[in-house]
View 1: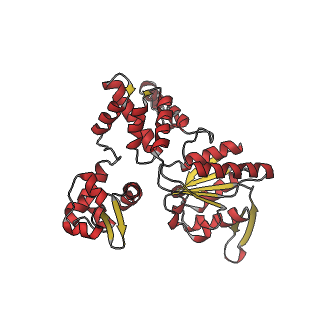
View 2 (view 1 turned 30 degrees about the vertical axis):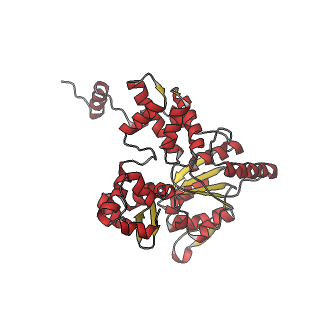
View 3 (view 1 turned 120 degrees about the vertical axis):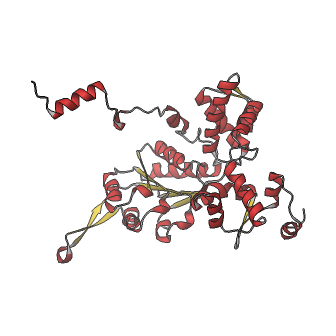
Length: 355
Protein backbone atom coordinates (compact mmCIF):
# COMPACT_ATOMS: atom_id res chain seq x y z
CA UNK A 1 0.00 0.00 0.00
CA UNK A 2 1.42 3.36 -1.04
CA UNK A 3 2.18 5.71 1.81
CA UNK A 4 1.08 9.30 1.20
CA UNK A 5 3.12 11.95 2.94
CA UNK A 6 1.44 14.74 4.91
CA UNK A 7 2.49 17.37 2.34
CA UNK A 8 1.16 15.31 -0.57
CA UNK A 9 -2.13 14.75 1.26
CA UNK A 10 -2.51 18.49 1.87
CA UNK A 11 -1.82 19.26 -1.82
CA UNK A 12 -4.48 16.76 -2.92
CA UNK A 13 -7.08 18.20 -0.53
CA UNK A 14 -6.28 21.77 -1.67
CA UNK A 15 -6.65 20.72 -5.32
CA UNK A 16 -10.05 19.22 -4.59
CA UNK A 17 -11.16 22.08 -2.31
CA UNK A 18 -8.98 25.06 -3.23
CA UNK A 19 -8.26 27.52 -0.44
CA UNK A 20 -8.56 31.17 -1.41
CA UNK A 21 -6.08 33.22 0.55
CA UNK A 22 -6.76 36.91 1.32
CA UNK A 23 -3.74 38.08 -0.67
CA UNK A 24 -5.08 36.27 -3.78
CA UNK A 25 -8.48 37.95 -3.71
CA UNK A 26 -8.89 40.67 -6.31
CA UNK A 27 -10.88 43.64 -5.09
CA UNK A 28 -12.66 46.04 -7.41
CA UNK A 29 -11.31 49.42 -6.37
CA UNK A 30 -12.28 51.13 -9.63
CA UNK A 31 -14.97 53.31 -8.08
CA UNK A 32 -13.02 54.21 -4.94
CA UNK A 33 -9.93 55.12 -6.97
CA UNK A 34 -11.77 57.08 -9.63
CA UNK A 35 -13.93 59.00 -7.15
CA UNK A 36 -10.88 60.76 -5.69
CA UNK A 37 -9.87 63.87 -7.69
CA UNK A 38 -6.32 63.94 -9.00
CA UNK A 39 -5.95 67.71 -9.38
CA UNK A 40 -7.32 70.98 -7.99
CA UNK A 41 -9.61 71.53 -10.98
CA UNK A 42 -11.56 68.34 -10.29
CA UNK A 43 -11.45 68.84 -6.50
CA UNK A 44 -14.76 70.51 -5.66
CA UNK A 45 -15.13 72.87 -2.69
CA UNK A 46 -12.67 74.39 -0.19
CA UNK A 47 -12.02 77.29 -2.61
CA UNK A 48 -9.90 79.48 -0.33
CA UNK A 49 -7.80 76.51 0.79
CA UNK A 50 -7.17 75.49 -2.82
CA UNK A 51 -6.00 78.97 -3.78
CA UNK A 52 -3.61 79.08 -0.83
CA UNK A 53 -2.22 75.63 -1.62
CA UNK A 54 -1.73 76.44 -5.31
CA UNK A 55 0.51 79.38 -4.38
CA UNK A 56 2.37 77.35 -1.76
CA UNK A 57 2.98 74.46 -4.16
CA UNK A 58 4.19 76.78 -6.92
CA UNK A 59 6.59 78.49 -4.51
CA UNK A 60 7.95 75.13 -3.34
CA UNK A 61 8.54 74.03 -6.94
CA UNK A 62 10.41 77.24 -7.77
CA UNK A 63 12.59 76.86 -4.67
CA UNK A 64 13.22 73.22 -5.50
CA UNK A 65 12.42 72.24 -1.92
CA UNK A 66 9.74 70.07 -0.28
CA UNK A 67 6.57 71.64 1.09
CA UNK A 68 6.33 72.74 4.68
CA UNK A 69 4.53 70.27 6.93
CA UNK A 70 0.74 70.67 6.75
CA UNK A 71 -2.04 69.97 9.21
CA UNK A 72 -5.65 69.63 8.05
CA UNK A 73 -8.45 69.48 10.60
CA UNK A 74 -12.21 69.41 10.55
CA UNK A 75 -15.14 66.97 10.69
CA UNK A 76 -14.74 63.58 8.98
CA UNK A 77 -15.60 63.16 5.31
CA UNK A 78 -14.62 66.62 4.08
CA UNK A 79 -11.68 65.48 1.92
CA UNK A 80 -8.54 65.67 4.09
CA UNK A 81 -7.07 62.47 2.66
CA UNK A 82 -8.17 63.41 -0.86
CA UNK A 83 -6.51 66.81 -0.82
CA UNK A 84 -3.29 65.21 0.46
CA UNK A 85 -3.37 62.96 -2.61
CA UNK A 86 -3.97 65.97 -4.86
CA UNK A 87 -0.95 67.75 -3.33
CA UNK A 88 1.25 64.71 -3.97
CA UNK A 89 0.04 64.49 -7.58
CA UNK A 90 0.64 68.20 -8.16
CA UNK A 91 4.15 67.96 -6.68
CA UNK A 92 4.87 64.81 -8.69
CA UNK A 93 5.91 62.78 -5.64
CA UNK A 94 4.82 59.58 -3.91
CA UNK A 95 2.57 59.63 -0.84
CA UNK A 96 2.70 57.13 2.02
CA UNK A 97 -0.62 56.86 3.83
CA UNK A 98 -0.98 55.54 7.37
CA UNK A 99 -2.99 56.26 10.52
CA UNK A 100 -1.88 57.06 14.05
CA UNK A 101 -3.48 53.96 15.68
CA UNK A 102 -1.37 51.78 13.34
CA UNK A 103 1.85 53.30 14.71
CA UNK A 104 1.74 51.60 18.11
CA UNK A 105 5.42 50.69 18.47
CA UNK A 106 8.49 52.89 17.92
CA UNK A 107 9.74 50.60 15.15
CA UNK A 108 6.53 51.25 13.18
CA UNK A 109 7.16 54.98 12.78
CA UNK A 110 10.96 54.48 12.50
CA UNK A 111 10.48 51.98 9.66
CA UNK A 112 8.29 54.38 7.70
CA UNK A 113 10.64 57.34 8.21
CA UNK A 114 13.70 55.31 7.18
CA UNK A 115 11.99 54.14 3.98
CA UNK A 116 11.03 57.66 2.81
CA UNK A 117 12.72 59.18 -0.21
CA UNK A 118 13.54 62.83 -0.77
CA UNK A 119 10.47 64.99 -1.38
CA UNK A 120 7.96 62.25 -0.54
CA UNK A 121 4.84 62.94 1.48
CA UNK A 122 3.94 61.05 4.64
CA UNK A 123 0.23 61.30 5.46
CA UNK A 124 -0.87 60.38 8.98
CA UNK A 125 -4.62 60.24 9.55
CA UNK A 126 -6.12 60.87 13.02
CA UNK A 127 -2.73 62.22 14.06
CA UNK A 128 -4.11 63.34 17.44
CA UNK A 129 -4.12 59.65 18.45
CA UNK A 130 -0.34 59.26 18.16
CA UNK A 131 1.18 57.82 21.32
CA UNK A 132 3.80 59.81 23.20
CA UNK A 133 6.79 57.76 22.01
CA UNK A 134 5.87 58.03 18.31
CA UNK A 135 5.22 61.74 18.74
CA UNK A 136 8.65 62.37 20.27
CA UNK A 137 10.29 60.44 17.43
CA UNK A 138 8.57 62.79 14.98
CA UNK A 139 9.88 65.99 16.61
CA UNK A 140 13.48 65.86 15.28
CA UNK A 141 12.28 64.20 12.07
CA UNK A 142 9.99 67.14 11.29
CA UNK A 143 12.31 69.88 12.48
CA UNK A 144 15.84 68.74 11.58
CA UNK A 145 15.12 65.74 9.30
CA UNK A 146 17.04 63.47 11.66
CA UNK A 147 16.19 60.37 13.62
CA UNK A 148 17.50 60.02 17.16
CA UNK A 149 18.24 56.37 17.93
CA UNK A 150 19.76 54.67 20.97
CA UNK A 151 22.00 51.58 20.71
CA UNK A 152 23.37 49.39 23.49
CA UNK A 153 22.26 49.17 27.10
CA UNK A 154 23.12 50.86 30.42
CA UNK A 155 26.74 52.11 30.37
CA UNK A 156 27.35 51.11 26.74
CA UNK A 157 24.29 52.99 25.47
CA UNK A 158 24.98 55.49 22.69
CA UNK A 159 22.76 58.01 20.94
CA UNK A 160 22.95 58.20 17.16
CA UNK A 161 21.54 60.89 14.90
CA UNK A 162 20.55 59.32 11.60
CA UNK A 163 19.90 61.82 8.78
CA UNK A 164 16.61 61.52 6.92
CA UNK A 165 15.73 62.72 3.42
CA UNK A 166 13.71 65.92 3.40
CA UNK A 167 10.04 65.01 3.34
CA UNK A 168 6.65 66.60 3.97
CA UNK A 169 4.38 65.40 6.76
CA UNK A 170 0.67 65.97 6.24
CA UNK A 171 -1.41 65.33 9.33
CA UNK A 172 -5.20 65.04 9.43
CA UNK A 173 -7.36 65.16 12.51
CA UNK A 174 -10.96 65.61 13.54
CA UNK A 175 -9.82 66.96 16.92
CA UNK A 176 -7.14 69.60 16.55
CA UNK A 177 -7.53 70.56 20.21
CA UNK A 178 -6.21 67.16 21.30
CA UNK A 179 -2.86 67.67 19.55
CA UNK A 180 -0.02 68.56 21.89
CA UNK A 181 1.41 72.05 21.47
CA UNK A 182 4.95 70.84 20.52
CA UNK A 183 3.55 68.74 17.67
CA UNK A 184 1.10 71.38 16.46
CA UNK A 185 3.78 74.08 16.45
CA UNK A 186 5.99 72.04 14.11
CA UNK A 187 3.48 72.30 11.25
CA UNK A 188 4.24 75.19 8.92
CA UNK A 189 0.64 75.44 7.71
CA UNK A 190 -2.58 74.65 9.56
CA UNK A 191 -5.89 74.67 7.68
CA UNK A 192 -9.47 73.91 8.66
CA UNK A 193 -11.75 72.23 6.12
CA UNK A 194 -15.27 73.64 6.08
CA UNK A 195 -18.64 71.99 5.48
CA UNK A 196 -19.76 72.14 1.84
CA UNK A 197 -22.55 74.32 0.49
CA UNK A 198 -25.57 72.84 -1.32
CA UNK A 199 -24.19 74.15 -4.64
CA UNK A 200 -20.82 72.48 -4.08
CA UNK A 201 -22.43 69.19 -3.06
CA UNK A 202 -24.67 69.30 -6.14
CA UNK A 203 -21.51 69.37 -8.27
CA UNK A 204 -20.12 66.46 -6.24
CA UNK A 205 -23.30 64.45 -6.89
CA UNK A 206 -23.13 65.14 -10.65
CA UNK A 207 -19.47 64.07 -10.77
CA UNK A 208 -20.08 60.86 -8.80
CA UNK A 209 -23.15 59.97 -10.87
CA UNK A 210 -21.09 60.40 -14.04
CA UNK A 211 -18.45 58.00 -12.69
CA UNK A 212 -21.21 55.52 -11.80
CA UNK A 213 -22.67 56.01 -15.29
CA UNK A 214 -26.05 56.95 -13.82
CA UNK A 215 -28.13 59.80 -15.20
CA UNK A 216 -29.12 62.43 -12.65
CA UNK A 217 -31.17 65.57 -13.20
CA UNK A 218 -30.38 68.91 -11.59
CA UNK A 219 -33.35 68.48 -9.25
CA UNK A 220 -32.26 64.98 -8.28
CA UNK A 221 -28.68 66.11 -7.62
CA UNK A 222 -29.86 68.99 -5.45
CA UNK A 223 -32.24 66.73 -3.49
CA UNK A 224 -29.34 64.40 -2.63
CA UNK A 225 -27.07 67.35 -1.85
CA UNK A 226 -29.57 68.80 0.62
CA UNK A 227 -29.56 65.56 2.61
CA UNK A 228 -25.78 65.08 2.59
CA UNK A 229 -25.07 66.99 5.82
CA UNK A 230 -22.57 69.29 4.10
CA UNK A 231 -20.20 66.34 3.61
CA UNK A 232 -19.01 65.00 0.23
CA UNK A 233 -18.33 61.51 1.61
CA UNK A 234 -21.99 61.22 2.59
CA UNK A 235 -23.06 62.65 -0.78
CA UNK A 236 -21.04 59.97 -2.59
CA UNK A 237 -22.57 57.25 -0.43
CA UNK A 238 -26.12 58.51 -1.01
CA UNK A 239 -25.59 58.67 -4.78
CA UNK A 240 -24.68 54.97 -4.77
CA UNK A 241 -27.70 54.06 -2.64
CA UNK A 242 -30.16 56.17 -4.66
CA UNK A 243 -28.74 54.82 -7.91
CA UNK A 244 -29.63 51.31 -6.68
CA UNK A 245 -33.25 52.39 -6.22
CA UNK A 246 -33.27 54.17 -9.59
CA UNK A 247 -32.00 51.09 -11.43
CA UNK A 248 -34.25 48.55 -9.69
CA UNK A 249 -37.52 50.44 -9.05
CA UNK A 250 -37.45 53.23 -11.63
CA UNK A 251 -36.15 53.79 -15.16
CA UNK A 252 -32.54 54.32 -14.07
CA UNK A 253 -32.73 58.13 -13.98
CA UNK A 254 -32.37 59.96 -10.67
CA UNK A 255 -34.78 62.87 -10.69
CA UNK A 256 -36.07 64.84 -7.70
CA UNK A 257 -38.95 62.45 -6.98
CA UNK A 258 -36.76 59.35 -7.22
CA UNK A 259 -34.14 60.91 -4.93
CA UNK A 260 -36.66 62.02 -2.32
CA UNK A 261 -38.59 58.72 -2.29
CA UNK A 262 -35.38 56.68 -2.07
CA UNK A 263 -33.95 58.75 0.77
CA UNK A 264 -37.28 58.64 2.62
CA UNK A 265 -37.10 54.83 2.48
CA UNK A 266 -33.55 55.07 3.86
CA UNK A 267 -35.00 57.25 6.66
CA UNK A 268 -32.81 60.24 5.85
CA UNK A 269 -34.89 63.40 6.19
CA UNK A 270 -34.72 66.65 4.23
CA UNK A 271 -31.92 68.03 6.42
CA UNK A 272 -29.84 64.86 6.26
CA UNK A 273 -30.70 63.64 9.77
CA UNK A 274 -30.79 59.86 10.09
CA UNK A 275 -32.41 57.62 12.69
CA UNK A 276 -29.60 58.09 15.24
CA UNK A 277 -29.67 61.90 14.93
CA UNK A 278 -33.42 62.07 15.48
CA UNK A 279 -33.19 59.58 18.34
CA UNK A 280 -30.59 61.80 20.00
CA UNK A 281 -32.76 64.92 19.75
CA UNK A 282 -35.90 63.07 20.84
CA UNK A 283 -34.06 61.57 23.80
CA UNK A 284 -32.96 64.99 25.08
CA UNK A 285 -36.48 66.40 24.63
CA UNK A 286 -38.50 63.50 26.03
CA UNK A 287 -36.22 62.24 28.82
CA UNK A 288 -34.36 65.37 29.86
CA UNK A 289 -36.83 68.19 29.10
CA UNK A 290 -34.76 69.45 26.19
CA UNK A 291 -31.50 69.54 28.18
CA UNK A 292 -28.92 70.40 29.23
CA UNK A 293 -27.60 66.83 29.59
CA UNK A 294 -24.07 65.42 29.52
CA UNK A 295 -22.72 63.61 26.45
CA UNK A 296 -21.87 60.51 28.52
CA UNK A 297 -25.50 60.24 29.59
CA UNK A 298 -26.68 60.62 25.98
CA UNK A 299 -24.25 57.94 24.78
CA UNK A 300 -25.32 55.51 27.51
CA UNK A 301 -29.03 56.07 26.83
CA UNK A 302 -28.56 55.52 23.09
CA UNK A 303 -26.15 52.58 23.58
CA UNK A 304 -23.63 54.46 21.46
CA UNK A 305 -19.95 55.25 21.99
CA UNK A 306 -19.17 58.76 23.26
CA UNK A 307 -16.78 59.27 20.34
CA UNK A 308 -19.57 58.38 17.88
CA UNK A 309 -21.78 61.04 19.42
CA UNK A 310 -19.00 63.67 19.45
CA UNK A 311 -17.41 62.90 16.07
CA UNK A 312 -20.32 61.73 13.92
CA UNK A 313 -23.60 63.15 15.24
CA UNK A 314 -22.77 66.39 17.02
CA UNK A 315 -20.72 68.34 14.41
CA UNK A 316 -23.55 68.56 11.91
CA UNK A 317 -26.31 68.98 14.51
CA UNK A 318 -24.39 71.93 15.96
CA UNK A 319 -23.65 73.34 12.49
CA UNK A 320 -27.31 73.06 11.46
CA UNK A 321 -28.44 74.72 14.70
CA UNK A 322 -30.47 71.77 16.00
CA UNK A 323 -28.26 71.27 19.05
CA UNK A 324 -26.54 73.65 21.46
CA UNK A 325 -23.49 73.01 23.62
CA UNK A 326 -23.46 74.64 27.06
CA UNK A 327 -21.15 74.34 30.10
CA UNK A 328 -23.79 72.10 31.71
CA UNK A 329 -24.27 69.84 28.67
CA UNK A 330 -26.20 69.57 25.41
CA UNK A 331 -29.67 70.95 24.78
CA UNK A 332 -32.01 71.04 21.83
CA UNK A 333 -32.44 74.42 20.16
CA UNK A 334 -35.78 75.93 19.05
CA UNK A 335 -34.84 74.97 15.48
CA UNK A 336 -34.47 71.37 16.62
CA UNK A 337 -37.97 71.41 18.14
CA UNK A 338 -39.42 72.88 14.94
CA UNK A 339 -37.69 70.30 12.74
CA UNK A 340 -39.11 67.42 14.79
CA UNK A 341 -42.55 69.04 14.88
CA UNK A 342 -42.56 69.22 18.68
CA UNK A 343 -43.91 72.26 20.49
CA UNK A 344 -41.51 73.84 22.96
CA UNK A 345 -42.68 74.03 26.58
CA UNK A 346 -43.21 77.56 27.89
CA UNK A 347 -40.23 77.20 30.25
CA UNK A 348 -37.97 76.27 27.34
CA UNK A 349 -39.33 79.19 25.34
CA UNK A 350 -38.39 81.62 28.08
CA UNK A 351 -34.90 80.13 28.32
CA UNK A 352 -34.21 80.36 24.60
CA UNK A 353 -36.09 83.59 23.99
CA UNK A 354 -39.43 84.14 22.33
CA UNK A 355 -39.58 83.59 18.59
